[in-house]
Image (tube, rainbow, N blue to C red; front, side, top):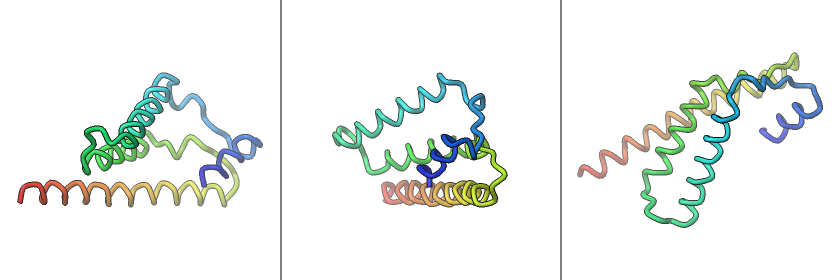
Length: 109
């Protein structure tokens, strides 16, 4: 889905609002994600809950910052795809929060 979106941005059929996010913020998030991937790959001090907390942080940020609205197109297919991506992110965030809560309950037993 994201590869297809990138292709549309590159061919000009989709407008990308490059001013929606500051470059420093994008760089910070990218470095944060890279760091967390390295930690997960090395398994250094990573608990079972940490990846869930990272996912919660990233997905909540994506939704709060209206990330899926930085793209604009007249193409109904693209509008539908972006709406679906946003809905799926919302649903996944709910699942992640439920797993975090479940983990908290399990650790207290």
